[in-house]
Amino acid sequence: MHLSTHNWMRAEPLAVTLKRIKKYGYESIEISGEPTQYDVKETRALLKEHGIRCWGAVTLTLGERNLAAKDEGQRAKSVDYVKSVITMVSELEGEIVTLVPATVGKVVPDATEDEEWTWVVDATRECFTHAQTKGVRLAIEPLNRFETYLFNRAAQALALADAVSPQCGVCLDTFHLNIEEEDMYDAIRLAGKRLFDFHVADNNRFAAGLGQLDWSKIIGTLKEIGYEGAVTNEFVAPVDRTPAAKYPDMVERSPVDIPPEQLKFIQDHGSSLLTEKFYDDQMRITAETILPLIK
Image (cartoon, rainbow, N blue to C red; front, side, top):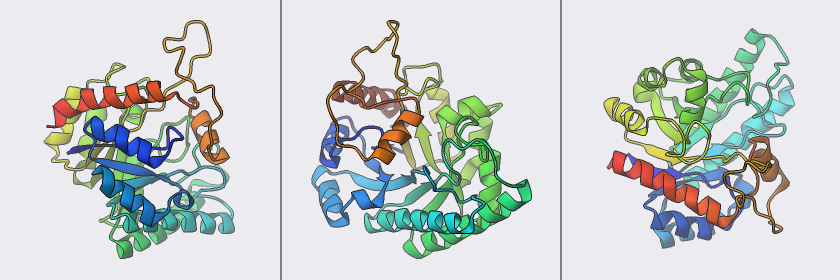
């Protein structure tokens, strides 16, 4: 196992992120799933300069992106988007694309269960075939019920993976596991060798170590199943706008250049633009919590 992180949680130059995570012992990064934001040649040079490898990317399934959409054209565009993320990861010599099949924030279905299942299986299978040609592994990630109605538990993600291919895997996230699973450790065991990626945030979605989750037991369970991939930091710090705020200086007050889609994605997760100091602290705390357990 090694420590990795996403970078979609704060709008900052990639070089700044890479320098930040290197000093805390991160070995890789999961690039934000927006291929148009990254010049592959420049990104590869930055990764090499900072001694950080690309582990993969997560699809930012927002807006009209939805592999289970009722509209055939919408599904086709969503497939094209996922393929573009896969291609980017391949060109960055990454290994994994974490796929969130349905639109994040969509909690009401548009069709019957059978119709949606057919659509999402066919669309995911097309994405998987492309991933195979690019040498990238595809991992289905379930989210909690408040972010999507379709895939919330490990068993559901495995059902889609099984319908696609024995070589299709899953990605689990401790924040979602804590909400949806009867026993998160059994969910990890259920995934077993099909667990391709693992995301971490505490039960309150702050950095690992700032909540109630038992990180020693979580990492111990990963070791039990022989997991050898990344443990990827994905805190999405909730903003407190009241006088009771524990971190009153966490929100960035200066103008920040950020694509509106990314800003909406962050805000829809109950977070906001974060100050550099707060963001840096979250990166450090996760590393201090996780690294001693995985080494």
